[in-house]
Length: 497
Image 1 (tube, rainbow, N blue to C red):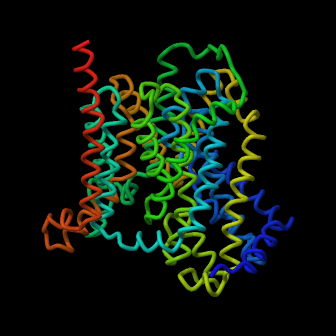
Image 2: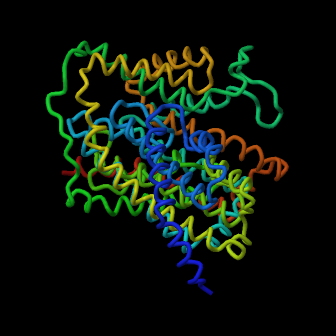
Image 3: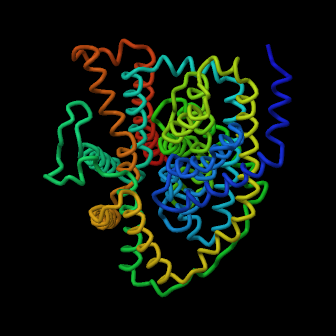
C-alpha cells in the first residue's frame, strides 16, 4: 500500500531552503572534486562526512548524493577538455569527448555531457523508486560465477573498442590483465610480480595508468608533432541544439538502463557501466565510423550510464544494506553513524527518509542540469589557453595527481612510465581502450573465477550449469563475434558490388 502521507512529508522536507542549499552545495563540491584528478566519489564524501555531524540525516545524505552525481559530471569535463579524466567514471568519455572539443566544439561536448548526465541520473532515480525491492532480489541471486560472466561480457567489448585491428586490441587487453596481476594475491596474501618493491604490494592504481596513458601520452604526442605554438583555429561555447539532443535521446535512454542494471551489482561502478554503454551505443549506431572522432552518441552514452549507476547502487544499499560501490559504502557508513539501518525494514521503519532520498536524488539531477549548463561556457574557456601553457599544465596536473593518490614519489615515476607506454601505443596504433577495460574488469574476473572454482572443486561446468551465468557468457560470445561478422559481411557485400 502506498503511503501518501510519508511521500508528501518527504517532498516538503526536500523542498525546504535548508535541504536545497545543501543539495546545491553538494553538487557544486562534486563537480570540483570530479575535475580534480585523484578524487573520486568515495573520497569526496569521506572528506565532507565530518562536517555533516549535527545536520538533519536526510539533508546530510542528500548532500552526499549530490556530491556523488556532481563528481561524475566533473570527471567528464576534464576528459573532454584535457584528455585526462578527473574520475574513473569519465574514462570512456575520453574517446569522443576530447576529439569533439578539439574540433572547436568544447561547449557542445560539455553540454552533451551535462544533459546526458542529468537525464541518466533522473531516470535511474525513477527506476530506483519503482523497482528497488524486485531488482535487489534479482541482484541477490548473483554469485561468483555470475560476476565472472559479467566480467567476461565486459571484455567482449574489445571487439568493438579495437576499431582498426582486433589483434592489437587483444594484445592491449592482455597487457592490461598483466598489470592487474601485480600486487598481493587476493587469496593467498602473498606478493606477486612486485620485484621486491613495497610500493607495488597494493598493485598499480587504475588512475595512475589512466593519467599516464592518456594525459601524459597526449603531452608527448603534442610535443612530438612540433605544433605546440599553434592555437585552436575555431572555438565555440555553443551548447547543443534541441534537435541534436532529441536525436540522442534513444542512446541516452538505453545507456541509462545499462547504468542502472550495472549499478545494482556490488563493485561494478560507473566506469564499467560507461564502457558497456559506449560499446552498445557504437553497436547500435547508424554511424559507427564516427566513434573515436567526436561522435555525439559516443559522448552521451558513457555519461548517461555512469550517472545512472548512482540510482542503481542505491538499490542494494537501501533494500539489502549492501553497498553497490565505494561511494555507496561511505554513505552506508554515514547512515550507520546517524543510527539508520539500511535493509528491507527501512521501508517500513523510516519511509519518510527513504522517500526523501528518492526526491533528493531527482532534484539533484535538476540541480546538476542547472549548474552544469551555467558553468559550461566558463569551463569551455579552457580551450582558449595557448597550447604551450595547456600541455605544460596538463603535465603538471598529471604529476600532482599521481602524488595526491598515494603520496608516493614512486607513483610519479609510474605515471611517466605509462606515459611513455601510452605514447608508443599511439605511435604503433595499439588502442588504449581495451587495456583500460581490462584494468577495470581484471580484478573482478580473477577473484570470481577462482572463487567459482573453489566452490565447484575445480569443475568448470559451474559456469554453464547455472542459467544466469550461462546466459551472460552466451551473450559475451555473441557480443565478441558481432562486430567481426558485421565487418566480414560488409566486405563481402562490397566485393559483390
